[in-house]
Image (cartoon, rainbow, N blue to C red; front, side, top):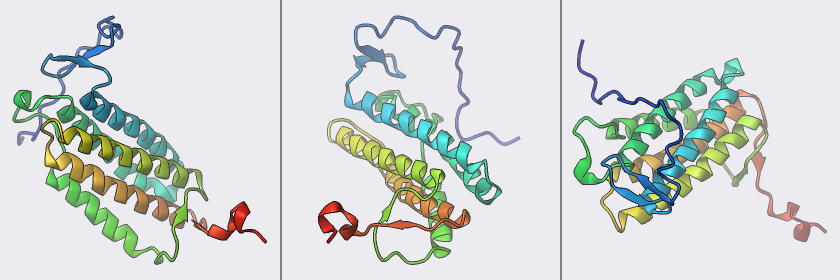
Length: 205
């Protein structure tokens, strides 16, 4: 059997609380104690938040045969997000050669899915509003949280070393989530909600 590219987790979560963070500090993978409001903590904490919303979208996508493929894709994305969180929770000097992280292959797979799914969608003549289906709205939540995670990682990169693949992956994932949202409504035969400025109260006659 060929070696896997990454080390498997070596965890023993026997105790859920340790009281170690009661003073507002937490530990990185290398053991460094840092404030819980540090940008590095904020970055992988937001990715954890994103992963939770992606899990919600997986559940919704798995409920309908038309979107089962998307459930499989999003499940893979969840693993990729955990890999990304792993590398961001580690200072560069402590990174192991086989530590999980996102790679160019992950980005390329997202691009393939974007191109394939987008080819089946009608051209947009306006911005779209989240909604039409629950799955679509959940994917838009994922997209906006992904953009926030990207902004935080970019901010972190101005002060500390961050793998270039981290920003690239989040940038591409946010694009993918937008396409997934449109594709899901298409598969569910739901009409897209387009932005119409004059439907605002100030635009009504």
